[in-house]
Image 1 (cartoon, rainbow, N blue to C red):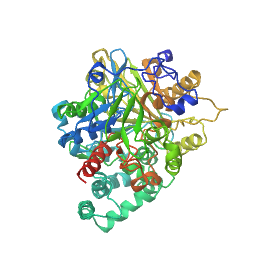
Image 2: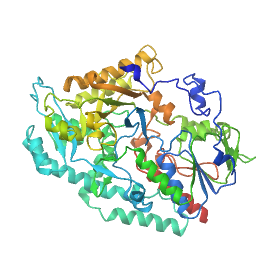
Image 3: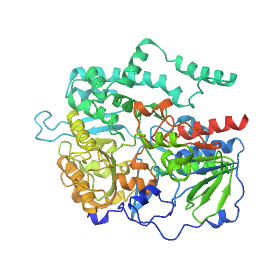
Image 4: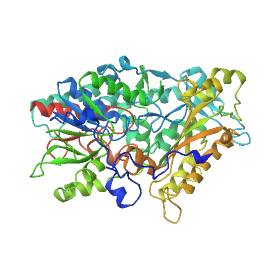
Length: 590
């Protein structure tokens, strides 16, 4: 079965611009033939107002907003498809995978409206079930009961009540607390951070605008709750609200997503907050599927950008960001085929590390302190993504699949995010192993089956589905004596370990798999340019948020950053791209 793994290292790279560090480590085999410009691009190597390097969703958002103000913008994307980590690809014939990112919930409503994305095919599919946590039939604590949470408050109450009446009574108040904190914090992510100290009248007015938006939601209780979420471990916050292990553990999973952090560490509660900060179709803190997969978000942004006049080129790999003779400002980019495209402004949608350390060879020498700070930024993450094509739905022993469920394309237990952890200690133990350079013996797993609600993704009429497994606590840097992601057998053993955990709750799951696309942290770096496999372009912790995250303005004149490595951070949010465009447009006016 696992001979079908498609995310193995050493696949021929579509770009000879592979990361120089990776090449020094001999991790990747690079195509010997550089990718040529497309004929479209080769025929019009003019000077652009702005060049955007990297066609991920943030780069596309930035390009679209710049074009709205009349800028002549070119987007250059290394891969054959735009979207970065927000892509839909048919790796197994007949099955469409959201290969990296897998749920929508953070994309800012203002971006959807400003760019008219729904006119370009963006369609969300709401989930009546937000999460399902099965338990083992022989678990003495739960006796085969399961936890279902979703949009129906009464059903939530009844499900939680199985484990704790007090928790059922507290849950709605907990959700309201998160809503109140969200309303206070959101104005700070909808806009770029203000210049400090303010130097011009416009700076003071801008700061006042942000503060005014936050003051609307200001009260003593919300300030106290916000402070607690920023400065407390998630376990402490959840222990104050709830008593049942299964509820606390289900909610705590949001506190470790994409982060090498434990639920008992300060900063984990902020990660939880970050993942409930969005909204979908007016539903605050909700997550949804996207019709056609996550690539539909990127495709709708690209279509909007094109209509605004943006030129977008795929298979166009940037070899170098070019600088002036005094190395103080950018002058354009050089592509892999040595073509040069000029521009006084370059926006990078790539990771900050790749931008400065690999696309600007002289940067370390010209800016040694900044380069050292960049090299020391926390890149730990521990994400492993597995996409599977299955010939039948998982049949959970604690909540078996009915015939009606099969006919309808799944029951409520298949529609939401499925968790396989039932005790907080499960998360803590997995973290401890991973932080020591050992892939977790029992990694934390989130499963989603988007094809149950989006039948365009797989041959649902045959009972076939797409099951996506987002796996946590698989460190990029593994102790040499333990193994290496470069070893196919080691990678395969980890994948099988994940499948066996699912088998415990849904016997026969492994046998239902007919195709696999497994992406280790190394593969995430190779395929999507995510340095050390970090899905947020840098760890999302208290030590790297707000003013401690990379600025949109860089030390080089004319070079700007629009990736998730800038404020307000990662997830398919679009805010870093929009905020970068705001900063750049402001600088154009000065």
